[in-house]
Length: 145
Image 1 (cartoon, helix red, strand yellow):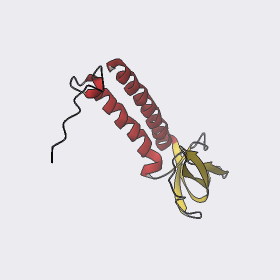
Image 2 (cartoon, one colour):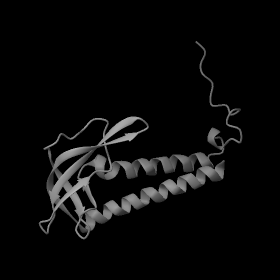
Image 3 (tube, helix red, strand yellow):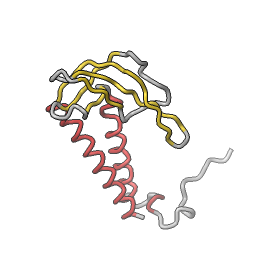
Image 4 (tube, helix red, strand yellow):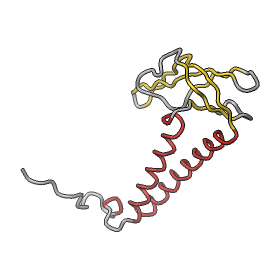
């Protein structure tokens, strides 16, 4: 189980690092523009709807782009017509993010957190996740009432 958790933590860490590098590249060699929300793309994930904002902005060359965000909400937000700031890569304006913590940094940080937790569980000697038989591991006793 230790090696499985270790491999999973390394895969998540690699994905997180890749996401961080893309975003840092946009920050370093990118542009910033004002745009607005033009709609929402509805996606079904495990029978739960997720609404991903579609935004429009004009890059530094005067070309208009319509991009659908990878991050979404359970309700359509921000509302259509909302003015927002966009960060985009100058050489590849299709690589664009809504300039907010959630759309820009939240998911790389979540993946990094999961990677750290799995790494810790893999090497922590008393972890139940590291126990050969999860069913016989003492997950802690509940206090009696």
